[in-house]
Amino acid sequence: MYSLAFSILFVSFIILTLIVRFWLASRHIRHVLTHRGAVPAEFAEKIPLAAHQKAADYTVARTKFGLLTLLVNTLVLVGFTLLGGLQWLSIEVFKLTGGGMGYQLALLAAFALISGAIDLPFDYYKQFGLEQRFGFNKMTRGLFFADMVKGVLLGAAIGLPLVWVVLTLMEKSGDLWWFYAWLVWSGFQLLMMVLFPTVIAPLFNKFTPLEDQSLKSRIEGLMKRVGFASKGLFVMDGSKRSAHGNAYFSGFGANKRIVFFDTLLSRLQPQEIEAVLAHELGHFKLKHIIKRIAMMFAISLAFLALLGYLKTQLWFYTGLGVDPLLPPGQRNDAMVLLLFMLALPVFTFLFSPLTSIGSRKHEFEADAFAAKHTDARDLVSALVKMYEDNASTLTPDPLHSAFYDSHPPASVRIRHLNAAPA
Image (cartoon, rainbow, N blue to C red):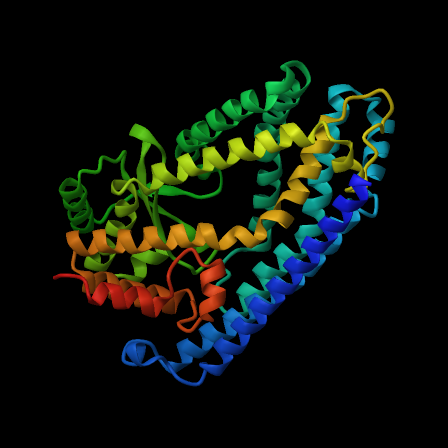
């Protein structure tokens, strides 16, 4: 009875999620197309009509493509769960491995490979169809597949040992396994923050020290004013993959480094680059990074505690189309991990605006920090150029933006900056 009720609840949330996402997308498309014919007044002197219309068309195309992938992903989700896909995969993998830890790791690996194979045509079209059509793709097909192979190998090298540790804890550490797994997961996340800038990121991109001495002096002056210590200033060859530009800092503790996309440096003036960086440094100085990490750890602890409970509930397995006794006589903790990973987004989607609200608040605060330490007009001009270069729509549907967007709409954000004290 409980399993049937959970199945009905699962399907209900899937349908509700589809309805909400299609409704928001249709609103967004209509709103963007309605305002396609004219640049908003506050941007009329800065952004050409052709660029505004390109952004509208790009936004509509991306939104429609997102709906297509949503439908396919929903069908795959139902296929893996209620239609018995995971159960079939479990049996087939057991035939090949004979059970044990090898079976569980193989089950997770097989699921990842099948999911990746399903996503591959969509990733390929997004890069060489959608991005290519609007002039953003700079990636060759060889680089695309090289990145894919690197990603698979890196995922296996990092993911399989981590999963092995978690599965071992689930088997041998008793009812509090989820707490020990949380400690491992938290330590792993911190380790990745340290290793990503110097070990992982260079596998995909080339990082060279910033050579422009004038810009370097300006940035070092900014860092000194705000009290930020960095391991160096680097330029990333983002142009070999995309025409989009950005800047960020990565790393943790004493391992922090500042990175500029070469596409950003080629487009912005030195004072604009300084203002953009001041915004990014604002996230650090205002402790947004620490707050996000703390929130991530708290949420992961709550979810792992929930997983610890669901692991022992028969209805959770059967309600999602899996017989927990298959294969017979074998532990199948890998299966509960897969089921939880598949089911969780269905039940948490409607809470997405909560994280968006917090993120937009941090963006306003970082903008105010940048306006305090640089000229707000420089950040405004940089943002206008970045909106134009990235074909970001200036007229998103307000409700769609509030639900999804981690950054405030362009007009609202720039209005706040223009009102900032000089």
